[in-house]
Amino acid sequence: MKRAIWIGILLMGLLTACRSSAEPLTPTEEALTGRITFAGSTTVQPLADILGQAFQEQYPGVELEIAAGGSVVGIEAVHAGTADIGMASRALTAEEASGIEAHQIAVDVIAVVVHPSNGVRNLTMEELRDIYLGAIVNWREVGGEDQPIVVVMRGQNSGTRGAFDEIVLGGAEPSAVRAQIAVTAGDVVAIVADNPSAIGYIGFGNLEPAISAVALDGVFPSEATARDGSYRLVRPLLLLTGPLSQPLAQRFVDFALSDEGQRIVEESGWVPAH
Image 1: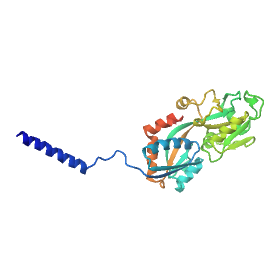
Image 2 (image 1 turned 120 degrees about the vertical axis):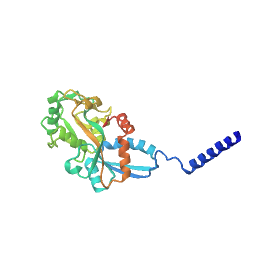
Image 3 (image 1 turned 60 degrees about the horizontal axis):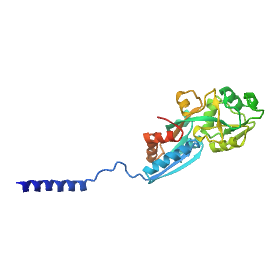
Image 4 (image 1 turned 180 degrees about the vertical axis):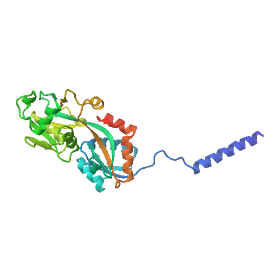
């Protein structure tokens, strides 16, 4: 009797082993392969690079090509199908948004910056507006030294420029007198760090010790002041996809919006969207 029981147990074990070998477990993540192309905002690009490194650790078979060019370039590339994912650092107009799905991955704070030797550490929004419109042309007019103000602004394709002009200037065209045009946020940092009379604006994540942030209406830029609404120069950071984006692009977007992706956003100096 005991022998029969042991034989039965042995047969059941063999059947289970056979079934297991014939029906392998499904892996939790399939092996993704392919290439995702990006174009757009120079502000979003470094964040996309950081997210991309973590994404490729999970999916080493996916190649990422992350180019910049400005928000307008990213929007046009998605419409044309020349990039799978566009990057924008401002809200899209109704015309731009037609046929595009915008995925907000972060909230960015635009910091107004000056040379560390500049004694001006606070401006009102009205003073900032007048500086960029050419109504205030000397630092002594806002409590600083007797020096002409050198205005640094981004190019027309820049999402940072678009957000700044909308929030600070109300859509008005900034004065080109004594202005220098910077192609990237890094260029703004370099110009301001090299000129004690300069003023510029960059995304909060681009702040460096070589320059100093200015408070607006007594409020300095930070994650906390962006969240509570006391600091007014904030804008969305977006990944854009369209009907010509390959399905693989959505996997990257999903990763950026996941808990892990949003943790990376926060650790990298931006305010998470969620």
